[in-house]
Image (cartoon, rainbow, N blue to C red; front, side):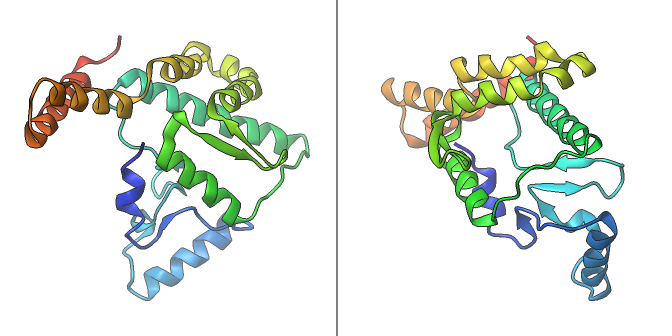
Length: 205
């Protein structure tokens, strides 16, 4: 249900980032690539999550471009709240478990393939859990943070995405509908492009 990962995984310096003990350690590693002439600067590192080279923040880059501005705001709000949650835990001297990349990669692939229709591994329980159930847990965890930022409604929009579908669902639906009306493959794809243009222009609901 996501094409971005299929494209970017063919490129170097993509996928999940490594683990660094500090920003200085990360910066040293980037410096090696820059000094070797492999990259110009840190903007040429295209991990799913990376420190911004220009702003004091973390960039979340794993998702496809949202064709719905409401969906985009929702994802940004959840990401912002999630980072604040981790920050709160750190301030309270609380820790979180670190899992091996192989486990995280498995969930990354499942999200890539099935989107919100699928299941992800709950590492603690050792079981596949439907995304809908995991979403409830996430929204409960970040409720305090959403209230702090005043973005509860934006975060809760995730439930509407769950029930109404993502852009992937709508694109597949448009293609299927065009095909059922007798359009060939190329014309069905053109119908999807027209839909994407219209949805992107629509703006806030």
